[in-house]
Image (tube, rainbow, N blue to C red):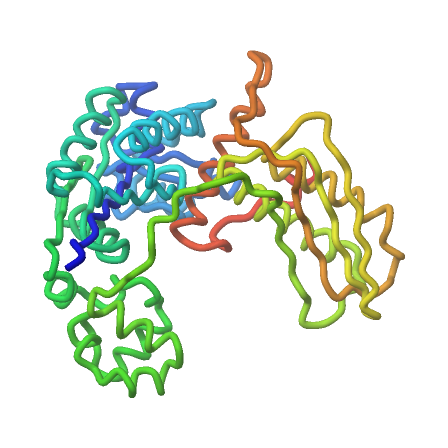
Length: 395
């Protein structure tokens, strides 16, 4: 009989805030938020636990956060702090096991099935090391699969004492997955957003246990393939592996096909900038830099045009990628010609990090702003935050 897997989910508690407290210990215990200015329609990237007691949360407009907590301290993104701290944490995580799937700047899955110690022992050892060596708080959830480990971590953090970092460890023993999930609200399950939750509640399904007990065939008939998947998840079944990166990616690209052909130049440029942003985010998440930027255009008659340019130095900056791909577009697009598809790609990849000189503080600040935006999109979806038009004009 195969032994059950041992999966950990690591989440750095209020990561940006924890890093800011290292830089300025006077922030400890105070309500503060990392993000943009309310006068410039800034968004909360992260907030301290004292601020959360007022109802402040990530992705909230900073102006609303100020209304909820008038004494809120606003901290702009630090220079070089978040990315460097994340690298330090992930280096220690990979010393425990090479089977690590980093899913954002402050979150990762670990497969520790090959290690002999119990999950809780491994979790406490890692948590202690990160706290003692890096002075950063973190919470961990453990189970036989990624789904339950992630939910266990969410539950553990929510049950921790309010007002301070949770530093929670929550382990679900093998065979107890369905029982652990059963009393939780259906919205705690991956794949249940507001619309799906509304549909399930209309069926009288309010908890994951009720969802697990609902006839699977009927659920599939009502929600299609998504219903079948939810039925399995409600029973705590998840066979997905922890995908540790192996080998060298050859390219990273994104493209979009329009529902109707587009002939407006500004709309096409906006689409290219969004794709550049997505490609850059994938580069950063996977730890790559790219040197060659590619543009793909498919016209209404299905003619496909491609162009590329090679940069002086590799990058993972969406501003740089957008600037180059828009320049290529302006050179090859027959003005007014309807376009069916646009694509952006980056090739000539290498592992590494952008090296910044002492005089490139602005670029360092922008990299951490990008990290904050990446984290918000990971947790709240792609559309939670966008660059303003004036910001793109600066590239």
